[in-house]
Image (cartoon, rainbow, N blue to C red; front, top):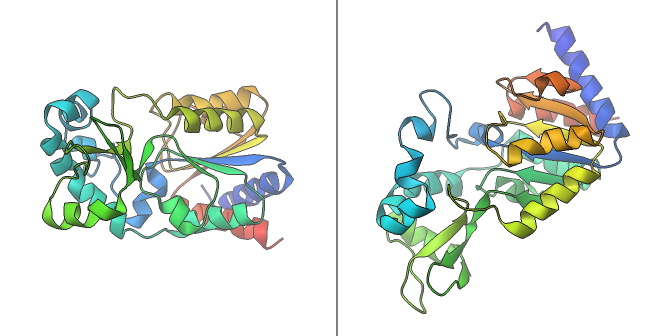
Length: 256
């Protein structure tokens, strides 16, 4: 795409955001890879090119071999703890602060949207910020356990019953967190614009949210390095790095 065409699409995206009454955002792994967090599917660097999900990241695999799960998760959790929000995260937080977007639905479990300053974040695939005992279902904050886990490899255990504390992230074979998923669907049904950033829309049921928004008449903006099934329905498709494109859009909106 020629620079002039790209700039025109950025400006059009900014115009749509300014005009929207209820704009929301849907983000995926591509919004956090600029912060140094590996995604799951990219050729060569994706986690699923090095591990089979059925061996480490299903609920049944966790129940059979929890220590193997924690061994797999440990370097990823370390990346997430040390990662910093990138310009895309900060730009989305600035747009929310100025009331141009109402909610961020994210498939990411890294907490970077919150750390960047976004307030209404819906982590539909869960979070590493809390843990739940698999026996007594007591939920606790992760901060007390995270450093000994990352630095010494000590898997977190419940102080009441001694069983493992499972991170509150959604594994394969698990349902999405019901309350947050309901809020995400309600936001989708209410929106008149959905900005999709850094996701190839391959994981259901979250991948169906853009089509749901489109069927309700919402405008669709897609910022992603690769194609998605929604490209043909989108008002605007911008190919490239979200950490460059989202700030460019935000700058046009906020400087107006």
